Image (cartoon, rainbow, N blue to C red; front, side, top):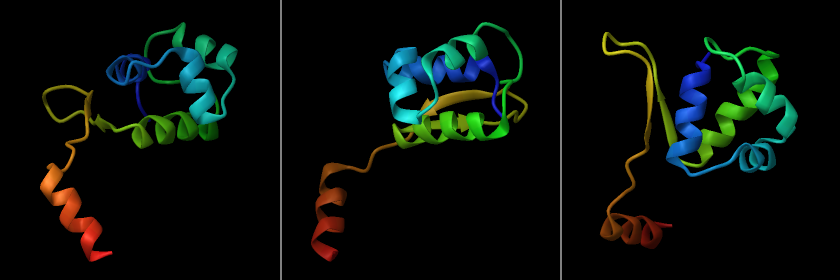
Length: 91
């Protein structure tokens, strides 16, 4: 599971408010506010965390697990425009 700090950082990377995350995940905004009000591991029900993570990953966020440098988040690398065009032509 991710930490509250990772979730806040992920929202910042994609420029989402709590309301935006609520809309994308199907989790209520008050629930997101409650979860983000404490520090540490993301609390709440497992299904709630899974919905939040899925919405942020769909928006392009990658969650980085503890690997000696600490947990974090980053934006997924987008394919180069010419690679995207080649992939579309193959379909």
